[in-house]
Length: 133
Image 1 (cartoon, rainbow, N blue to C red):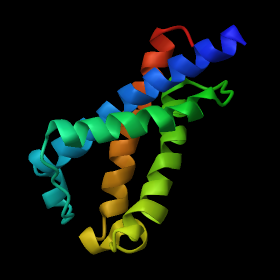
Image 2 (image 1 turned 120 degrees about the horizontal axis):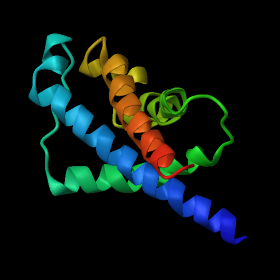
Image 3 (image 1 turned 120 degrees about the vertical axis):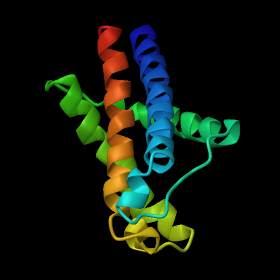
């Protein structure tokens, strides 16, 4: 039981780190014009409320790091990041009236979301690797 709780806390912390990575990647893509270059209307303002929400949800999503994995940490980070990206694109953003894949923000919106989630997922997976997990 102690080992399970230890892994749970490691994965939650890695998820928080992944959420921070996602938030910063999405902000950077908007701030430096990558989203605008792709004709995607995503350019979040970097604020404590913006970051806090993504860090907390990242911690919750980080529990998927508990799934057994034998491949490289980069592959784990990328492939597991597709789960929250799918939830965003197929459930959460359509609930806000943006349509499936949030295509109302631009045709390449799914690419921007997947890249931001991948940045966070790889960061979280790297943190777990650095901790020996």
